[in-house]
Image (cartoon, rainbow, N blue to C red; front, side, top):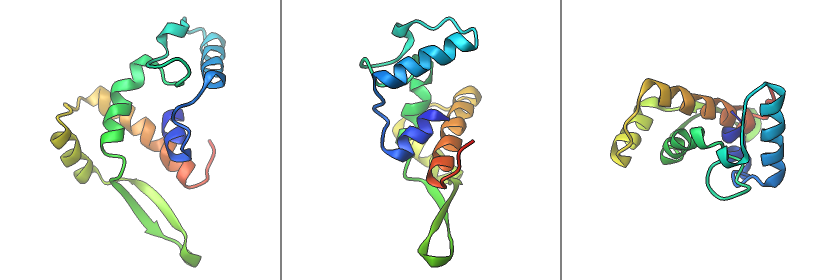
Length: 119
């Protein structure tokens, strides 16, 4: 979910503080996480196992269903799954149930951030 929140907040590139947080969280939960397990450039804050889902999400990150609220506001409902499927197919991304579950976690984080909710 944090990757989705980071995307929605415009801070996807993370930083060493997020890397430190990820390592501390992993230690707290008994996960053996090495700094090398963080993907890409040092300091981007994305775990290597999440990169395929993040790439898939970024291929469809414009396919949101939005609902108007009073006073000109908008509420993010979630991805338009039919449009997302077309976008993933056109991007050549083969979707599996496990990958889709990870994309949905990113979606949930992005939706929470876009709607101002913290869970």
